[in-house]
Length: 85
Image 1 (cartoon, one colour):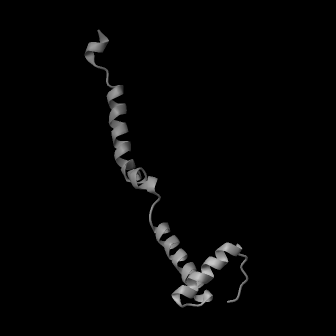
Image 2 (cartoon, helix red, strand yellow):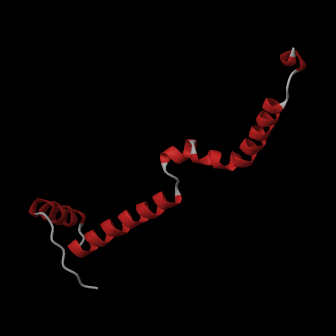
Image 3 (tube, one colour):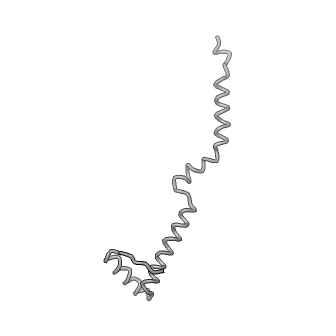
């Protein structure tokens, strides 16, 4: 597929020089760079956000949390005989 890109002059010159130093065409250079960027994006989508690693995984504890809350509520409903006096 053909497309037109507008790049800053400095970035274009750097890319062209790097491609030449690697002995590849500018087309190959940009294709490789794009593929690498897409690969990284794909891998990061599979990984959870860093904050989810610590907190998001706790979502599996929702059933346990519900059970604990029920026990706490039951205990608060219980009247200790000493409190009646």
